[in-house]
Length: 305
Image 1 (cartoon, rainbow, N blue to C red):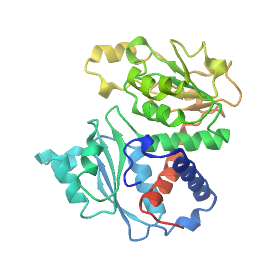
Image 2: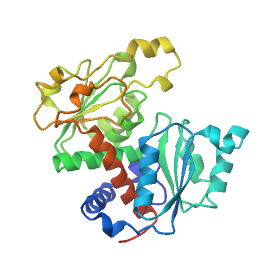
Image 3: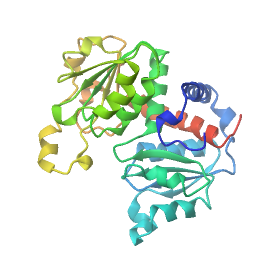
């Protein structure tokens, strides 16, 4: 694998291997502390990020490597009018691997054509976020010990949420998976993904309007925020932003071993009162992001430990 643009660039076997390496990193961190010594990661973030950017940087530092880059488009030469193509081609002269986030869908495809350095898509518009999906998969594995035979509820902004788009693409390749999409009419899961990933494989799914009606069935509840930056109309955002708010009482009918996930940042779609519930996995999920990105960097740089 040269680049990671979409989660489907990885086979099921490669995903399983990445999870295995991440688990070994968690168990034996000292074994990996110099694995990427003298290697350089460039983080090109044309869109704001906290967890993704810092987890990539932390991952590289914990592997003994170094990091260069920028955290917003305004601090790069794109503010002067430089094209994405030229930026990537230039940075590829300096770094061994590039992690890039961009607001435009398909930007990583442009990037991979302009450099021989491995490109990791750290999020492109509302399309894909494959390393968040790897983070989600590691969290599910550490909590459930399996990827098969799970009922997964996805709640909130399913239209623009690149994290849920990528997660469905990954989990659809395992057996016994059922999806329940919980969203208002305006933010329903894109039908083209349902057709390509679910209907083509005969995977069971349902679309519902409330989380309460399906809570007892779920093994995983994946919450998402309604993203102001994806809306063209502020009035639509205000009308929809508080459609779903998870509170402790709504968790009462849920399974005792159900897990609650969220890619973060949250606004108010999960009450802080839920944070102390042992089923709340979103901060553990954030930590898992560093471990799985360490495993991914090792794979893409072809470093063996």
